[in-house]
Amino acid sequence: MNKNIFLLIISFLFGWSAFGQNTHNLTLEVKSIKKVVGNISICIVTEKGDFLERCKIGRNVPIESKDFFVVFEDLPADTYAISIFHDEDSNGKLNMGKLVPIPTEKYGFSNNPSSAFGPPTFEECLFKLDKDMIIAIDL
Figure 1 (spheres, rainbow, N blue to C red):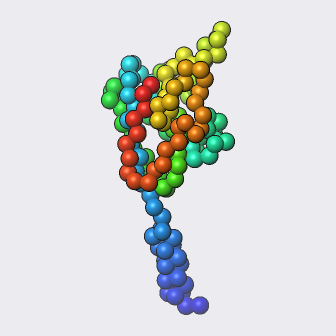
Figure 2: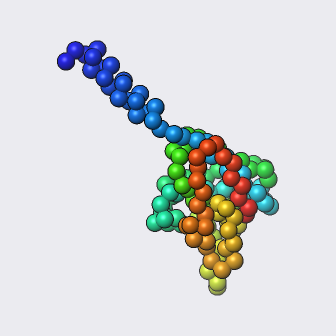
């Protein structure tokens, strides 16, 4: 096969697959930050089995002000759930109390469900990303 024809076919195939993809930007606004220290640890998942277990799309972002925004660009259109926590001591984990195993650092979820009696379900945190969006999460 002629090298130019081969390159043309490869270019067409890669171009065609990219043409069919539907991606969007997701801006995350974190509200109620009390202390401008540490990081915000962000985890975005699409599968129930990954929720609060494995992070498929994640980021640790240093907090530089009480107004906190982070943008995730070119996410595929899908249904997502987000969990975040304020990693005040930058140790990479959500600190828990020693006597009672409840979080000692602030945390939050997409859709801001109640978590007074334990973490919310995956379904409570789901949202559909089908356009560029801003999601606000309260800590």
